[in-house]
Every structure is written in structure tokens, then in C-alpha cells.
Length: 156
Image (tube, rainbow, N blue to C red; front, side):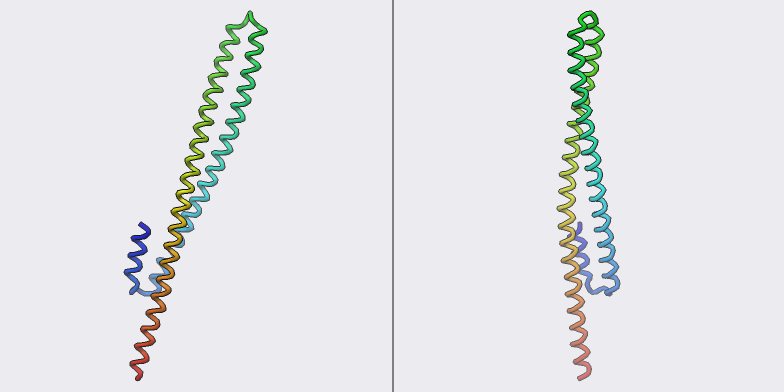
């Protein structure tokens, strides 16, 4: 899409300099928006990573709690049915929390991958914008030289 826009803009170099400047300004604004979007994704990834860490810590705490409950169950043989039910609930919660932590970790990795893709796209986009700006400058210079050459011949 960007390449098509750049080609289209290159084909329209006969337009007024003000119009080209306005289009360059729009491209720079879109680029700034893309950069802000990437920064926002980065902040989201950081937030997901923090949440993942907290969940992992909670899972470790729950695992420790499960171990303590199991030890108490061995000492309280008379209440094994109640303790067993509690252990089962805690274990299920621990397994679910561990699964959720894994899911969040996977999601964070996907977001990191997507951020890399966006970063690559943005770098390519910026290269094309810079190339376009260079073409516009060259066209301005060429038009200026053509105008100066024509004015010189008219005076002779």
C-alpha cells in the first residue's frame, strides 16, 4: 500500500510544491501515529509481562501451600476426607493458575513477535518515506533548473 502511494505521489510530481509538502506532512503524521501505537504495544507487553510474573509467583505460592496442606493431611489421618477435598481444590487452582500463566506467557511472546513485525514494517515505511522525500527534492531541483534554463533562453 505504501509503495503504491509512493509511486502515485512520484507520478504526480508536476503538482504544486505546497501540495507535496502537505502530503509529506500527512505521511509524517501517520508515522508519528504508528510510532505511538508501537510504544503503546510495548507498554501493553510490559503490563502483560508484569501480570505473568505475578501469576507465576502466585502459582509458586499456591504450590508451596499445597505441599503444606499435604503434610498436614498425613498428620491428621482422622480428617483426611476434608483435607483431601481442600488439597484437590488448591491443586486444581494451582494447575489452572499455571495454565493461565503459560497462556499469558504465550500471548506476551506473540505480542513481542507482532511488535517486531510492526517495527520491521515501520522501518521499511520510513525508508520509503525518505526515498520519496529525496525524489521530491530532486524533482524540485530539476524543475528549478528547467525554469532557470528556459528563462535564460528567453532573455537571449
